[in-house]
Image 1 (tube, rainbow, N blue to C red):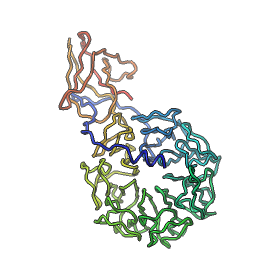
Image 2 (cartoon, rainbow, N blue to C red):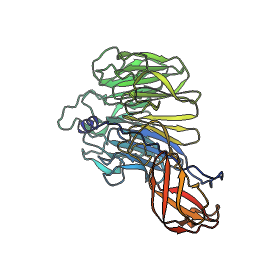
Image 3 (cartoon, helix red, strand yellow):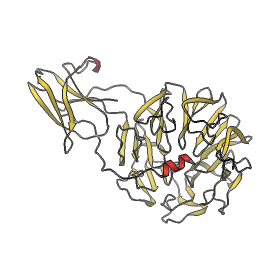
Image 4 (tube, helix red, strand yellow):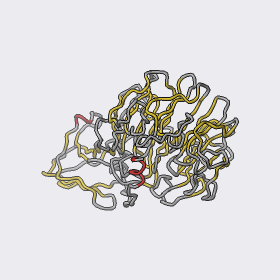
Length: 464
């Protein structure tokens, strides 16, 4: 429970949101285009984030207290950092640890392991990825414990099991370790989807039936009771096509596009217009829903038109509606173009159809990856990071001022050149005393010596 206590005790004092942004061109000249890879998959965990790019590379940002970023240290980062160059096909972010799959079907884990959730046979945390299963893994899920599927549809579990969430018929009470540290088969075949919540698990079978096990004190299993169970029990007989498990609430989609919810609703995360919890599935949206995600106490979903909707806890801006107010009804955040969503403890990620990564919510551990430590209550584009932007031609200037709006943190550098087509590596750094933010989004660059710019153009470059 160490990780849970650490998380729950973190201060949520708000800081005034700094309006992060990319420098605007003072001249109406198009900046040079640069090639890039696209983000294809996202995962939001306790206080860190992962994403995959189209080249199969794995990137991380945020909290690293337990080594969950896999960079070989325990230092956090507020900008995306690559840890695997290629070959990663799936990711899952849990509470202080991360899992990922490679193209050869191998399962890897890193980070918090005091309850055996990495499944490596120890209870030791690790800050470097280690292989757990050599081949045959097809799907992974991470929460307070871990689940995975093998190619024949068998369900396996490891980690924390105090509430019976592994579904193996036991309740672990081995203090200080409350789980199993090796993969254990729970269902032999036929499982098609999995979701790991705080202390409960959901899975689907090939016949569209929904099954659940674990903590049910808020009704999150949806069986009409509030009793925990340590074995899988069927909740819905057929027609379910997608599932999501939050800390103590659950969401699922039916084949008709309807959204259903059950469990804890104290912050409005079920979206039914009340703050009353329920122990039975309740229909929230009648149709048109295509994807769902559940965080600690907030929920996200997509509709067929690419719109993003949110409900629940919002005191850290994770709903992205521009306020810090909880809401118990779905509200539209983005009108179109969203293709994937991920809900962390108190932050959210989403992808747009152009492959760009966006984020909102708490950022005290750098999990948004924008280079800052303050959060945002409105969606902020994280990738691609801002490209150098043509600024201004100068003649014998000793002071340059330019208007900026903001969207990415980090250091600012001034580069000078005469040919817009030349690579940035051939541009000349212009030494300055300082480039600072003043007020009203006005940046100031003060040169050490007067600059005879002649026909030179200047780029403001934000470092990665």
